[in-house]
Length: 162
Image 1 (cartoon, rainbow, N blue to C red):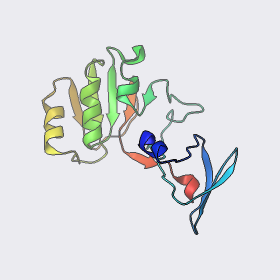
Image 2 (cartoon, rainbow, N blue to C red; image 1 turned 180 degrees about the vertical axis):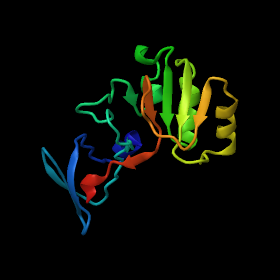
Image 3 (cartoon, rainbow, N blue to C red; image 1 turned 90 degrees about the horizontal axis):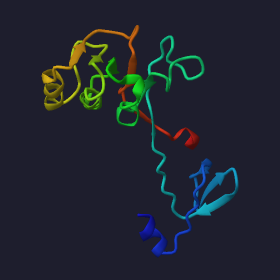
Image 4 (tube, rainbow, N blue to C red; image 1 turned 30 degrees about the vertical axis):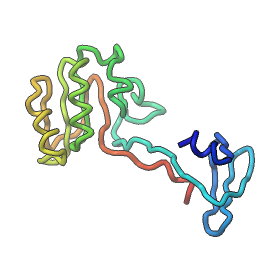
């Protein structure tokens, strides 16, 4: 996409946008460095993993990035999780996928779900249920575990558009 847009003369600025005005054309876009106008704006901000709030889960004083993560592929192979029980919070396809991936590293993987049934597709539920290293805990909340991965969705990183 980048190559194609450059071929047609697009100016690309790799900066963090702090404010936009999309109420009239040309659009106005601000960064810490400059303000520009544009006929077209492509917003591709990514997303931030949703988290649950409980004692020890916050970044400042808790275990975030010290045993709590939101990306099994990114962090699952870390020595802190090897051959230890690990938990995944969630009940959707992402949680089932994360749990199956983590069985390569943890001694056991618990899927912790606050409801009495999963939202995951039937095939993803089946994969988790038939994996001998996975145990699904229904109607459960987190209290203590060696490693924890949030898999409860993502929030678009679009707050600055307000």
